[in-house]
Image (cartoon, rainbow, N blue to C red; front, side, top):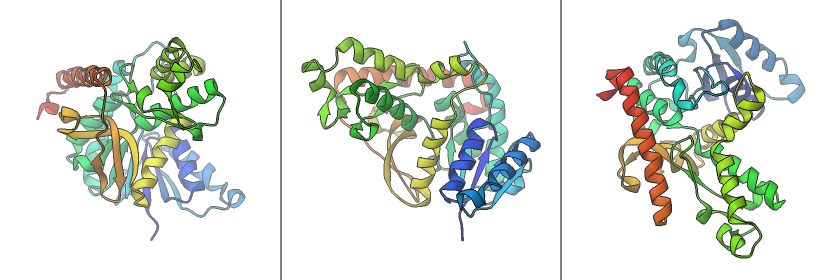
Length: 320
């Protein structure tokens, strides 16, 4: 029997997810949105391309949570996107309310699903989603690290004029201005970035500028679009996580996963490499960090903690 993926939110990311999942024939798709017409319209539009692209999946657009019943995977994009000049954190109050309703809906209709959250501010919203829904921490993750790593790879590929497939890298920490790209764990054509700086193939200043551009990757796109935020790359990253779960690929993917002592932190979500298989997050992979990286990671964790404290002030239920 074909798997079922429900997409909560039929905005730009939701619509792109539906299209990518369909063309890959990964699962049947339910596109849910409170704006019923948008979900139905996009589902119908994608369904009408099946004969051109030659894929065979069932697509449904709905505003009824019952249609998402017994989903294998749920990808949550519901919420308000950032507008120019808005930080991810400004979104907190608005999106917490939305996520509470979403979490209650998931708990009721698909308590065994693997849930991937893309809504910003990511790390705190994924923590709230897990608390509100009561789902196991291994079954609730946030999509951020794949996107941040992908942006970092792209900027490096442009600088070194080499395809992104020749670059290996990792970005840790919260999804925001304190994220931690790891130059010491990055190679370009097999050579470490450290080595490339020593060989004057790239200056330290240039590398710092690329790291800074990665941190502000989302804001740069918002500035261009003016009336929206990134959606193609976030959707592609979400599909990679869903695929690793559905096909039990056990890929090591950077994502916002629950820490229970790993990296010295407990009871919170943060961007780390995690193995995703049919059980959800099967293991958080601990990589050896240098002192400076440890410090940066701690700064990032503290930023997530602070924001979660702000979330508790908005909704004291989250402190339980």
